[in-house]
Length: 398
Image (cartoon, rainbow, N blue to C red; front, side):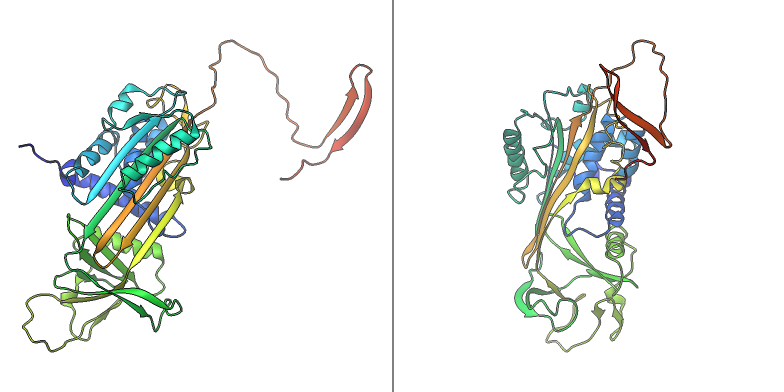
């Protein structure tokens, strides 16, 4: 009987930390926190890009991902193998190359075995094939690859991630209107309530975090920040709570009458003795989606040089010069009375850069700069007749 490779076996503790910190840095860098986003959908793609990059392009990608070159070489395949053993997580990674680029065999060898396919050059056919891949690898949660196939595409690197879990303790689903707060003008909403008999609520000065346990080894954490705290700061606190067991303190340590962010402790009379923690939860059902242009976050994602046609260096990825022209993510999530499901498809498109011939012969060249006011004229060459003349006092402004 074979030994299954779990995610904790596949990734060292420092690599898990690197992936989480990557998510934190990315979301903190944005002007707003997206409705749904997956740093893990991006992280192995940056690792794969880094293994094909050299010099400053590679260094920028590795720094953004928070890993070294040796880790980058193993991350995509290790993650994929580990995800196969999880009943709640599904992960796929794919690469497709067109006829204008020749992939480096060593770079291909570092990808998962079934990952590499071909692009036909027909935008409609390629879109249909990659849309089908996205749908198949998210069980239909996301039906399209988030790329513009009308643009020139010579290489696609993509990941598809989905998560499904069922709550250990289901919620009760009911319609209600909020009588105060920012949602009070929304009318009736889908509210969820449950009592969780476990130590699942932690509190700190600026935020409170609830852990909702699901099957398949999945937890969903909900973080509530104090009024006025920026969304990026609430997200950072939630990541802290998710990654640091020592974050905050348990709600079981609060005294009757004591309050925390969104939390109060009271007592009541019951028919049976209390045998463990009791956490009464009131939340809401949500169904969200987002479409992100990741090149807007190029600095945080290490894609500044990678997306620069003249400076990108992917010498170990393809024989021809290529650079990143699109980087996008489509994601969705649903939190319901019975469980949680989410999916993200992340795609990076690369295009062959213009061909720059290496210099072959010695030349002598004189240069002149018109960087101050100058005169000009137009003449009729056969006759020498001057047609137009004038003075340029300053250039046109854009």
